[in-house]
Image (cartoon, rainbow, N blue to C red):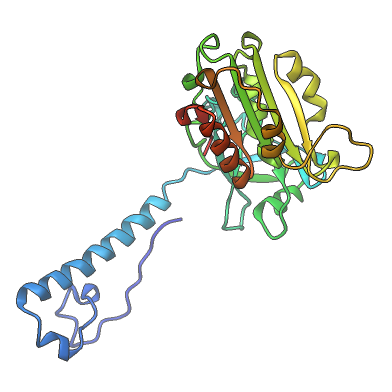
Length: 303
């Protein structure tokens, strides 16, 4: 988006006033009578500063670099969730800029103004090796994400630069100092958690790594086909269903309630936490953990 400004034609009386278009609005005469020259100067300067700030903000918003890339795969991942792969092999700098699990980018569809923020689901090594990003996208009515989920292989979308610092894993390293890592995700919030697990964070060198993963039911729980591999890497999966069917025998309710029932933290000061998903869940889990003695700076989020 470029900024353009086409001023209206100046009348004969204003043609000798080159700054007429930048003059702040006039104050009522009743106020002007009470103002000193200093007050008038402050009023004018304040208005000019506001104009400069608004233009500067507009310019900052226009610094995003967009890369046009095609969809190489789009398929259902669960109810209302889609697995989307985007080919970025023509943009190696974009691919290699994904360096940390938990990073995200903006995605927009040509001719649709509003972009979506999407966490990258694939591990950083995948982009470097395959030249592609994978996403788990929730189709929300009326959103850019819904339009994205309606596209097909070969359709072109636009991607911003990779954004965010991701999960700052150095805060919960080395593994021998933080043998317990508790991970919490709900819905499509499992997307950057997949990136975390599959990029490796020495889970097999820690004594207690648990993933509490919440969904309404199994039909809405993505990545079930990956659970076996995740567990073999050292992550214990605890699925939590808020509206299960009668055959479900696992944890029920909300993620925070399921964790509160279990807890079992041997050493709060040797515990790291990763959170992603519904805001209320994240806030309540963080409150429980901090109250139990876990350091707040050891609770990692990607936004």
